[in-house]
Image 1 (cartoon, helix red, strand yellow):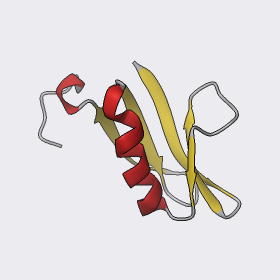
Image 2 (cartoon, rainbow, N blue to C red):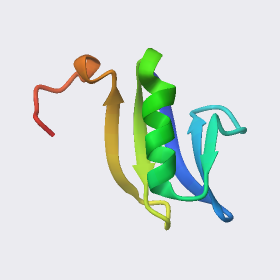
Image 3 (cartoon, one colour):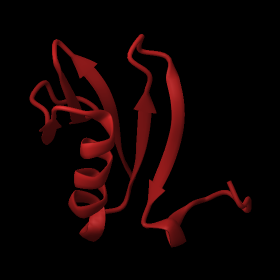
Image 4 (spheres, one colour):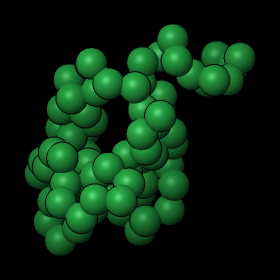
Length: 74
């Protein structure tokens, strides 16, 4: 499973695959990037860690949802 991170760099929010330097997707706002990420991950399996503006982890989402290894509703 691939790991991705949504982080802010400068005035842009970036979706970057772990190990890569260049972002896969970018947007002006975090919410816009989260929407783009849903489309980007539609045919992929991976974990997306969404970070706050200060870099701390806010939440983690698994795509595809059916591939989430946890037996939790969250």
